Image (tube, rainbow, N blue to C red):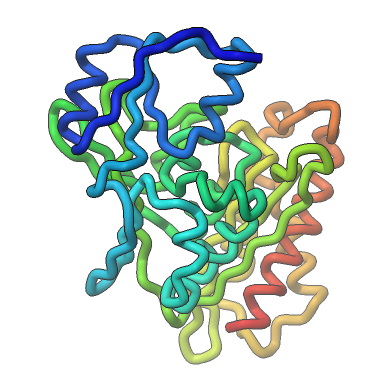
Length: 290
């Protein structure tokens, strides 16, 4: 199918893009296009204007600061995956980005666009929560920094206002942390029926900072607090497989069972069972590299 006709704009700066959004009510942002273009072709979306931010220099690239790594919103997945230093300093982000789509998708799709779209079955929300990233947005009133724990609101919903643009994602530098991401992919789309990201830090052999998150289960990415609590303070060397399994069994404890995703591919009951299994796998994988 072909989309309806639309006006096309290509700004050279974030400020120009914001002006174009203000001058064209109902305009949609275009970066990688993997979320927007299919909905336009199917008729689910029919914006009058597109504002293409894929070539805005300030929105692309990876910069290393003293304590954080800043990834521009329009940076492709492939650029993130190919950054060897990022694999060393935030493994959970690099590994999860590598799990997105295939090479063709990663060559075009954008890191920030993934989070801005907030698809509950996408891979990056879990990794962003596990890595404790900060999302930066800019609008007519200036710039805002949004902690990732406050970012996701629901299905395809987040804290970005209609007149704001996601500009960058700030990732903590954690060379001593160990991260892992595992998922049960949908056989039809490759999106996550359930995906779990684990990010672990230890001091003197004891787990001191445990962040575990999942996508594909609820209408947005969620932290698995009961699992984090069960593992924090445990000895890395003495954790048995049975103890990890027991901790992973707590993954659904804080989740509203009536809000668990239910579709043709998986029932809520099946998703919750998968959640326990993949939480255990993610923790074991992260521990193996700690």
